[in-house]
Image (cartoon, rainbow, N blue to C red):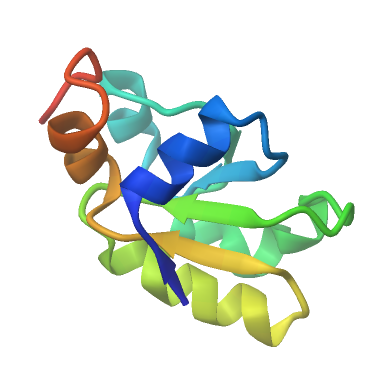
Amino acid sequence: MEITCSIVSKWKKDNKPFNFLDVRRDDERELSSLGGIHIPLHELEARFEELPKDKLPLIVYCHLGVRSTYATQFLKFHGFDALSLRGGIEEWATQVDPEVPRY
């Protein structure tokens, strides 16, 4: 149900197709982002049908990995190939890309 930052980083380098889903609040996204689709967790239940149905893995991220784990469980229940980014954007910034702002 989780995927590490190092694996996702390798996928990016290898051009493996996937979608990022950011489930953080708007104010957090303004501070820092890995890109991708943005649906805050509190809106996910009402908006999950907006997500692509292309069967690509959906890498869900938040700040530390807690909200993304909840979102991943919800999305899997609804048939999505979803994985939570372990450690969230914080771990990404410390282990993959120090240019990503931390907060």
